[in-house]
Image (cartoon, rainbow, N blue to C red; front, side):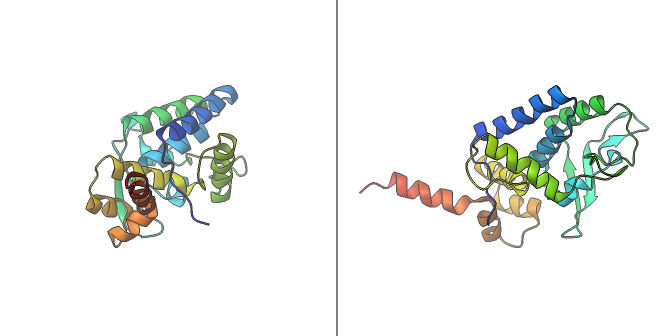
Length: 195
């Protein structure tokens, strides 16, 4: 089954608030930071889950890095992503709630194993159950975060060439299908062309 982007800004906000509130109540901001990073980096789930604190925080300078730099697992290509305010704020909250962190600690720790990240299946469950609870339209899963980034980037005027570059896609046709633009544009024609 195909995964959808979240097309409504209100759905994205509901998801972020849901995890922010749960994190504050439980003292665990892991899932909030996970969602924010997924929505703001266009990284695949496997790449997000492979992040360690050294990827995002400069321990010598005692500050967050300006970029996340990594080799993508799927494409084996080097990617460099600017960390925006939302990413840094979510990581600051996570760091505050965790207390001491070490450079090699994974960002999104599982409760199983000493320094093991949650699994892709667990990430899927976390997002899927929240989307269902919040009644968010579409087939929402962990990959929806990456697609939501692309959908919003396209809608805000990011060029097709830049989107292809961000996603490492071979053609814009792939990118359009990927972020669900084709169906939106078709729907708009049917709604606006009244004969």
